Amino acid sequence: MQAGPRQERFESLDVLRGVAILGIFAVNILAFGFPWYAISNPTIVPELYRQGGAFWWTVSETLFQMKFITLFTAMFGAGVVLMVGEEKPSPKTAIHRTRMFWLFVIGMIHNYVFWYGDILVPYAIAGLIVAGARTWTPRRLLIVAAVLIALNFGVLYAQQFAFQYMSPEELDTMIAQMWAPPPDALEEEFELYRSGFFERVGPTAFDSFMSQIMQGLIFALRTIGIMMAGMALYKSGFLTLRWSAGVYFGLGAACAGIGAAGSYWAAQHSMSAGFDMLQSYPSSAALYWASLVQSFGYAALVMGLCTIAKLKPLRAPFAAAGRMALTNYLASTFIGVFIFYGPPGLGKIGTMGFDGLAKVVAGVWLFILVWSPIWLALFRFGPFEWLWRTLTYGRAQPILR
Image (tube, rainbow, N blue to C red):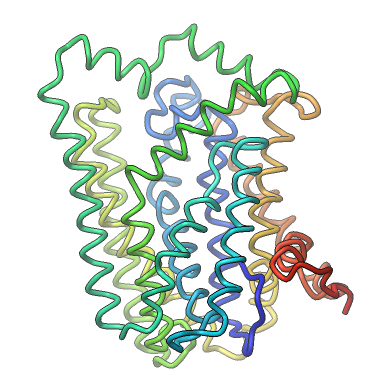
């Protein structure tokens, strides 16, 4: 996502950003197609046990869950260094703050008007925080990132640890509110999201608010840490193809394989435990750490592919998708809302199995990869990139090529 000027454009950054945007939707589709509880506890919907549901859920958990949002977060951190520069003080600091302000505004509209799963608001806040670290060395950035990510894991552990001190009544209440709501509450959720836009936008604001609170309390330190790690990877040359192809492919295969094994174990543990909230810690811990290793492996493999000149035509649609990351992220929301929420949408929430959701994902991926290069052949920016840039500079920016 960009709004400011760029002195140099790296294809590898655009390609990886485009890959991340596609992968994020493969996870977000669960939150569109089912109530948000199903992301952590898919047993609340019968589709898990129908039409290959367990298979598709395992694929999502093993290959996508927490991986592509990690990549996208790291790319955002790299973008801060690229946009603001490493000068101290930087003449672009004021522009960066304005960019983050307008990203915050766009995110708030996205979160409260369209969909509760917004990531733009936490990105805008974290983007202001990490800007102060853009002058650090890669080593210092990685050390601080590791500390923050470990502290974030401690927050998750503390939450799990607190369960043993809760009374049975308190646990039952928490489970009903956050993990396994009763059938009548689920049906109310379905009816709410199948209702018309003006009927649901007010009541769903609570879901939006709770989503923001949970992101802030549970994942803020991880988000900031991963952005710093992205800064380090950019400054070290990892994201700009300054490493050898052999290193990229070697690290990519090893890390992606190790991470996938850990993620698969986490998925199997969740299923064998019956998705019991009180037994979820081992699987959530394995997924937390495995996703970091796996994400790095994915990034290395993409960088390796970017070193092969003959593959440039195949990379072009992904690079175009990455150049329009903000537009494609929001477009994915609009498509999801139209398909699964009520008027003016189709109201399909709760009516598709996991295999049906996989088909929607494939369709949206195809749409993004086709329309992005066509749009950029005619225009300089994606429509929302243009809007963000215009708001940042306070005047309409040229958009036609």
